[in-house]
Amino acid sequence: MVPKLNPKTKSAEVNRARMLVSCPDRPGIVAAVSRFLFENGANIIQSDQYTMDPAEGGLFFIRIEFDLDNLDQRRAQLKADFAKVAEEFQMSWSITRAKRKKRLAIFVSKEDHCLLELLWHWQSGDLDADIAMVISNHNDMRELVEPLGIPYYHIPVTADTKAEAERRQLELVTGQVDAIILARYMQIISPKFIEYFPNKIINIHHSFLPAFVGGKPYAQAHNRGVKIIGATAHYVTEELDGGPIIEQDVQRVSHRDNVDDLKRIGRHIERAVLAKAVNWHVEDRIIVHHNKTVVFN
Image (spheres, rainbow, N blue to C red):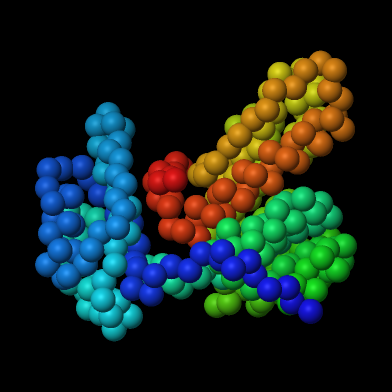
């Protein structure tokens, strides 16, 4: 039986849209965007902006939420008209409907804490997305997932079968999901797979990157005698654990903590950091610029 969602589940206004813009900084950008929305009858609900240091390229970033009557019928024309403004200011931009929930695929191995956190946020209505499926290289999480009415796919992965496993995964997710969440999925994603989902695969790394890249970061941290440990949520790129960072957090530890202690403490950090990153992604709060992110949280 599928449990009912919390009545507090977020429900975006039917006519609400989100606009993300990045472009070279110059006078008049905010005025041009605001004037365009006003002239089209839109009401700006929220606006956040950031200007990068001129020494780093002088780029301008803005996120706007606005309401517009008959949005579904008018969105195509709105985008066509805004393209003229965007061309003048050399903008990279998007306009999305807030009511359209992003569909997620969650990849997981044997550790359940990040998956459980995402499922709890989803059930409580704090994750405004649809979990379309869970894919795992083990069968361990099936009993957690299927009672919620979420399809669960077991695709074993070995060194010899990795290419075939990824082919089967792509068959399941292509055209069916908007983003992939690696909730402690302990497999390296191939460059070919990443090409299908640029800046749409979010990983949680159990380390405060760029420290302790790769496997067994808690053992690496213990051997180094660190005084803080952390976790990092980032977009996946071809560079191992080197993609644009979305969110990080840390907690103090001491010489009294062994590797198991670090893992236990780290699990609490990992689940919170990943949940924040996924929420910000599905709410269109992130703009990627090269290997950095601007997060309007």
